[in-house]
Image (cartoon, rainbow, N blue to C red; front, top):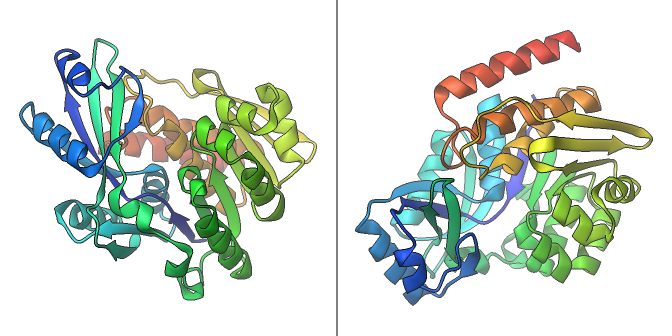
Length: 330
């Protein structure tokens, strides 16, 4: 089976379900927002959350994707940076438990963490991120041998803010013969790095994953027209339109993929798992439409759980549905 390497932020999600917005107000965190905090503030928030009970889930966008590709059976690797501490060790060991070859580099700073406040009847999420060691990953850390033997290389869009790092990674992946994919990750990252994103997609990227706000930020067009713009720049473009589904295009081939039936409780990780399903199907040589449908199937499973880790029963259901879909199109 074809293999995949990803580069991303090695973050541990620290999740806490809260009865009200008291802690959000105390730390000046608008409900539903994502705020970056310094180490001192991050430590204080972490201690406060421990008082109400927390769950630790190693994650980050690319890490979520690569965990799923490994569960699908693709030999999967991950490049990232952690601190020599408990959270870093938890991140590395969890990735390895999922079968991922975790090529972790170490920093003097503490490991990155994303503190997640879950509040209200609709389980709305508010994020306080301390990036820590993840920000220390630089172009000088990358070696050609890290990329050798992999068929795919997946880039987490949040890292594009470190332009020198991503330029070097893309060059090494292309030299190693990898198919390069990128998840644009966040519309504000796209807006603030727009010229670089265009250059990256035009020169290096084969498969782009974007949601509608990211596609709009990239192309300054509505999602359907943005899809056309992206598809003219790379081999395959995917624009996800939330609960309505996704649009995929390669050359003149276009498909609208309806979302798979689900009972959603938390949309976190849906885009990450969609990318994993799409890339897995693509690695099997499946038609473009089937790649989108496999992405839709697995994304539907993660929105039914709190957090980004799909439980075993849902994984079994997903694999069965995907096997049937692939068999029908083989």
